[in-house]
Image (cartoon, rainbow, N blue to C red; front, side, top):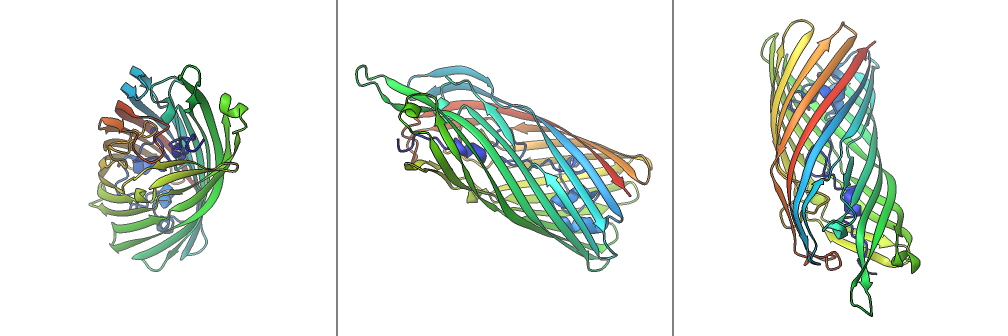
Amino acid sequence: MKKLLTLTALGAVLACSDASASGFYLKEQSAAAQGNAYAGATAGAEDISYSYFNPAALAYHSGTNVEFGGTWISPTSVAKNANNGFGDHDDYAGNIVHAAASPQAYFSHQINDKVTAGISLNTPYGMITKYADDWAGRNHGTLSKIISATFTPMVAYKLNNQLSFGAGVQVQYIKATLRNGVIAGANPQTGALVEDKSTVQGKTIDVGYQFGTIYEPWKGTRFGAGYRSRIKHKIKGDIAFNGVLGQMGMNQDVSARLTTPATLNLGVYHQINDDWAVMAEYSRVFWSSFDKLVINGEKTGMLSYTAEKWKDTDFYALGISKQLDPQWKLRLGVAYEKGAVGNEYRTPRIPDSNRTWFSAGLEYKYNDHLTFNVGYTHIAADSAKVNLRGDHRGDDRRGTLSANYSNKIHIVAGSITYNF
């Protein structure tokens, strides 16, 4: 029973193959910032949604503000030429990812000339990936579904006209449902492999922090830095087997430790004149904290060990904005992002690869109180190859797997902001 649970199964708690940023991260938390491919997200402070990347942005918004937004993420990840070590082959496994919505909400209130408080509700991680139960890579994963929510109370302090600071507390909820095939053993009479199916369900709530600063040396030019901490999670749930292993009494409670990565964002925003602005952004996601996944069962101790060996990733973005008239603003941006998983450790749950962003957005200011934003992004991802040789610790019962993936993503976002 040792290693029966493939936690690239619980790996899907951290593996978002339909996520729009590297690994399983959903960068889409602001319709306005998306129009610039998130260039200047740390320094722009153009509306209160920028506080997700830098809580000091709240200091730039007077009165009371409410913003509601959402993002529709439509990915395509097509698996072809899948082969495993048991002789199974799939020429075409189809699109294994599913479209999903990512909602956001923000609220801020200026307490006095120095202090502004705010809260946000975001979905920074989320996915649905699904293969046929009998596909060649079934022992490495057939269903991965994750739901997350992060609630963040924040406060910003404006030291003077040049310097602002902000900080917040992240309260993060994660729930996952994960299914995969399992080799239960061999038939003693025929020698044929006996297969089963396992389903893991688990959830957790844990806490992290964020902080940031904006420095404006002269009017219209801002430099920003924002940091969101890693969050150490301990997922608790259960595993259920559909066949012989369930009949043998192997259903049980399970737990797994995992860490969502820290992120560092550095940005610059420059207002050239009344009509034009330019911006840039650099982000680093510290994925190296995701080194391995270990699943422990209440009855049996360690059920699974998966070597992940993820790498820190870099994100670079450039953007430009044009004020078309007093009500309309056009935003454009491009970005490039490295994938988090190397060829040796890439799994079918996470066919992650390098990607290039092309973004555009429109802002419509209806009046001094009400503003609408829409953004669109096309992400062109490099082709990815899964080449699991079966020699990593924990892979001996999952078998080898090779497969080729082609990936792309379309993203549409919108928001409504009201200032009282």
